[in-house]
Image 1 (cartoon, rainbow, N blue to C red):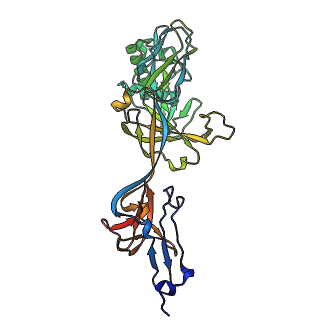
Image 2: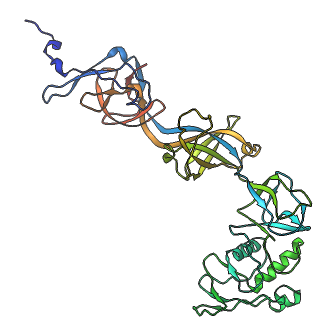
Image 3: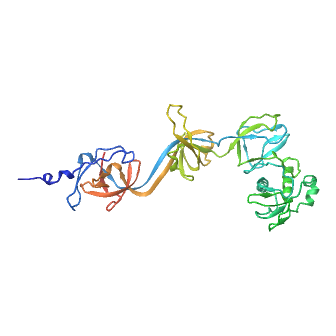
Length: 412
């Protein structure tokens, strides 16, 4: 009796496999398959479903990346309120949109300017006694030095200084200041504390006679009374250069009320990200920001928020909205960004990238019944491959015999 090859093959070993959309990370399933059987130690014999293999692709060396694009808003940082901290009447206010940098007046009280200093600690007491230490003194010392004033030598952390009670000499005549201009608080390199001595801590400044003299020169230069003393509200401490937002006060108002709002002058992009996805975003990640005119600029992730809030942008639909965190992205001050005050943008986050890998269209993959994948050459021979990243319809492959330029069959 005559038999065919098909008759002699064990039918139990046959199985048609399909690559589904889920297995290929969102790629549309195609009607491709491969029949595989084994006999003892023989190599797998395969027959392709030729009706599904209708095209040819070339193995190429390329860069792959996975990116998700989310909607964001370009604008200045959240506006922070500014309240006056010294009694008097407001006599001058800036215009909305004005930029105020270090040493410049943000407003005036009783016609005396209240300048901007950069730092993190506001003036919370009157600074008038030599030997006073603290982070507020450091703010004064650092800013005057940046403004070009000679503040002398500041005692280092770990030294001990003697505090002197405030006297008329500390804030009266210029002659009194000159007499003690070169004097400094008593400094001891070893801990010999007394009732009036304190240790300088890391981040503290010391109100030396040199610093008091610098304060007096600066006050005279900007139009403040040249007393060498600074009190609460004499300067406004901000994190950096500020942009004036809404101005609430008017000339003649009580200076201790709400005066205006300010924000950073650096534009940022705020992007709400689902809490389940934010784990793929890290500080320092590079992103691409698409502006309303379809131009793009590069950005960097500055802050990944840690407080999640429900997304109610679509209103209450009866279900629980996914919790979201805010990711803040910094962008360069290019011309395209500079002319925008606020705008909706698209931000592409790249969570993974592979450089210079071999790749083929996903449709070129064949699933093997014994596990793994292969690609099929135009003559029908199969080459087993290892798969890597899937991105934009392509898949990274590697294996013996896989080289750039190799022709493989694929689905249409």
